[in-house]
Image (cartoon, rainbow over all chains, first blue to last red; front, side, top):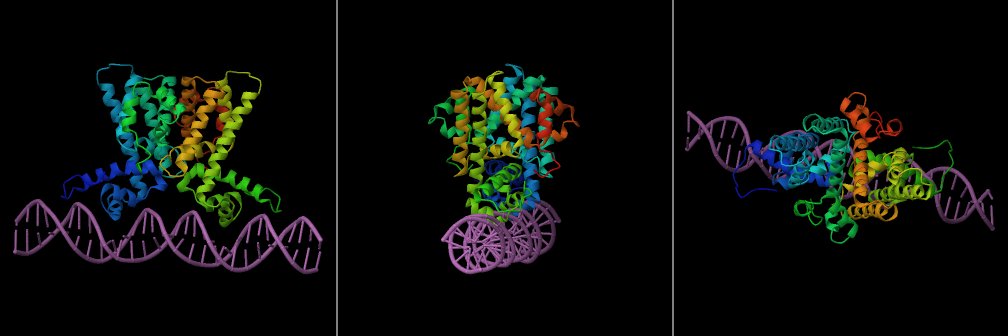
Length: 202
Length: 202
DNA sequence: CGTTGATGTAATCGAATGATTACTTGGACT
DNA sequence: AGTCCAAGTAATCATTCGATTACATCAACG
């Protein structure tokens, strides 16, 4: 995170984009309530008041992160749908989902948002986002209901395994190793390279 | 939650049990950081300092809730395993899982814990709990790896749908209705009766 | 009945945190 | 070279929250 080499000032839109990226990581690791605007600010290399100024409130920053995550997800899915089909749709969408692990914290932020259904502002936004994903799978990707359900379920399991930092255990525990091989039969190596480790704060 | 009719004093163990029950609901709805010891106290009908006294710290209260959730889950699974088999194991364990929805917040608290893998204290406890569930499914319930993975995945999807308060949308949105029917083909009514609604704080 | 230990609370403290205010700095454009 | 606005920060405020302390109250027992 933080500054690239250039010391020069950025446009507020560039800065917003950097803060958004940092916020994915911080909200993903700590959750909405657990994250602080100061952590986000330091991860983005700016001061805490500036984060507040560019996004208004912590709540609207979280909403921005949530929308960004959903946009990246659905845009990625759609781009893959438009590309020439070289494999079953479910595998292709799954690959897109795993590729997004490179955006640190994105999956965990989604999971955090999905657990806040009782929140007066975040709850409705999260529900709406989830429904949009379901609709995409059914209406655009052409999944039948059972396939869409399994796809979502596996996605939630992946989010859980990432959020748990289970990767740290993969070499120490045979059961976990087996779980990973079951869940990521072909992509194990790629996932290991990109998933967050326990020895980094996020 | 809160007091039953009796005004009489309780033993500290009885009180601890009541507070634990309330804490499931509060931590489930708000997450570890979002929940306050005062909310837990009011939900349990005691004062905030007393919650702290009976559990030491908020962190150890959360750990107690986490362990309680895992105990209830694994004890329920084992009791069902010991009962005469009247259906495939996967269905029977799934029924146990859904029955636990009656413990308000239990599933969501588990999901919250599973997202805190980076936390120095909660992280290791959550990982250990998750591994115990996996080992149970494989070693005691006799699930093969693929079945265990699907079972866990569907569980995580259920947690998500509960945490999202998706039930509120089930009559308003055809996609959600369809998702529920796919996920809970036979148990839809029971789930609807027991899942938390958006109009209650938890 | 009075002592004693456990149950329980009111009051309050200190640290953390989101937000606000007032200020500084840099660069684009005459 | 001077003006002016956008980018950015330091200082600080008000609130919230977990924890501590000191105090109150109930009931068991001699």
